[in-house]
Length: 65
Image 1 (cartoon, rainbow, N blue to C red):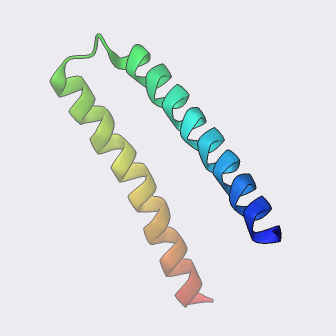
Image 2: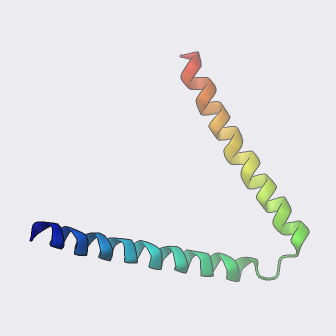
């Protein structure tokens, strides 16, 4: 019986996560719907550069200490 309650709870949590992800995707699509393709590619490049640099910094810092 307990496994059944856990499954129901897990399903509810998963459904809420999916709902929030969909809301966020819709919001971001509305914000960028008028961007042209080069603008989106530049934003993607900057995003990857920023977070790639952050990851590299954290990796180097972990091995340096």
